[in-house]
Amino acid sequence: MVIELRRFIMSQWDDYLNSVNGQPIDVDGNWGPQCWDLWSHYAMTQFGASMWQTSTDSGGNVHVSGYACGIWHGFGGNLNWAFSPIGADQPAQRGDVAIWEYGSAVGPLSHVALVVEDRGDYLYCMTQNPGNAHYGNLSKSGVLGYLRPDNQSMFGGGGAPAPAPAPSGGGTQHVVVPGDTLWDLSAAYLGDGSRYMEIFNASSFRSGNPNLIFPGEIAIIP
Image: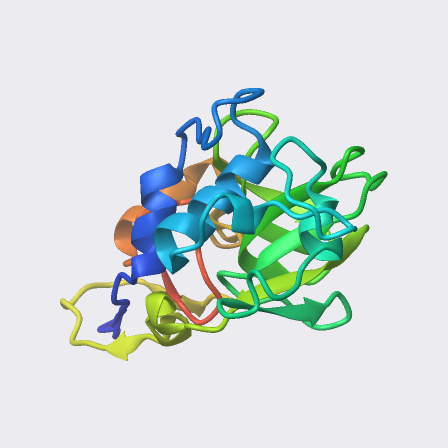
């Protein structure tokens, strides 16, 4: 059957994720690559913040080695020109900065990560510590809220797909919905989750990463 694929335009956000994925991001040179370093690198390189602007505690005092929850508790005039606070009762969107409270399951000493996709009870994030910057699912339990960039231009309009002609070929078309993974689609359609790369190679996902597919994208089942 002849099908139509959708081509996605790579955004500045996609380029940023690709540039940090797998890298040890250590902005301040202290304590190795921490979750704060990834957030700070994001704020500085993409929005022009300075290091001190990315480090406030609950009293609004500048610090570098304090806990990540202070980014939320101390948020104020030093960053409100670039980000707006969004309550944890609201859905997250790509590019948001998620912050977990001290004592949460995700970060016993608090945590901060960059949201790639809201998956209901979980956030698919670019996160760091433990390990270098990497993609991962993190529970929303303990999330204080999100810092949302006011300038959304780097996200390519939210990743909206632009229709494009597709080459002729056979296969079944599946529209990706929240919670889908290529492993699950492979298990459902092909009877074997380990064949997920067959779907990845037949499709055209904007991330170029089989672990990163977005709702609305088209998965082609060969």
